[in-house]
Image 1 (cartoon, rainbow, N blue to C red):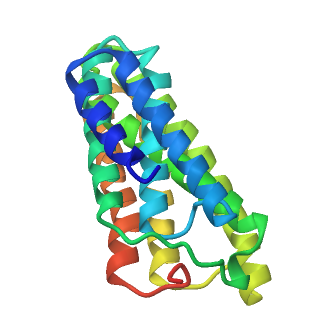
Image 2 (cartoon, rainbow, N blue to C red; image 1 turned 180 degrees about the horizontal axis):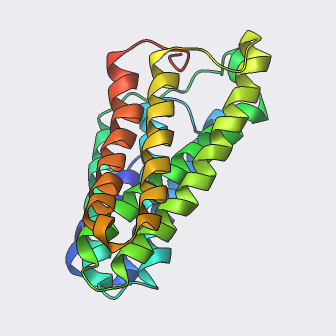
Length: 235
């Protein structure tokens, strides 16, 4: 079953130039892989770069498929979503798997809710960014906004659950470590993006770019901070 991510990479690559059903197939393969991972290690596969990158790829594909229903440029949208999924899954296959039992600090459903919602929101933010490039029609900004707004709600909930987890783990709802600081930057970036839209068409281009920059902040918060800095999220 360890070969399944490689199959999903091949399918995502085919999906870049082919039909929607290929992306669906890649998504199903990744779901199967994560189910196998969970059964083999006896817990949710949500710890370490390998598993979280696969889950990020799966999340991006899932929301890409959902959003593509309302998109006019369906093929372009799913093509670029496929590219993101190839990159994330490829990085996952180069990353070490964490098969060891969880430390006590992670053995709580608050942690699981926090992580699941975080990566679902990351997937939505990624799709929103892709929409900003592929949907050049009048409905593009609205579709980007609705996708990012849904991600914003999930990310806000993940912060709430993360605070509860932190309280039970360390006795405080917030720790001023690099991860928490960049999480705040990420949340504020999308807060600004969502509010800019109400300023009218004069700010439409600025709003568009703030949304795109927001996804770069997402990637740095997840990968950059995790790889370059020590924080409460390093285990």
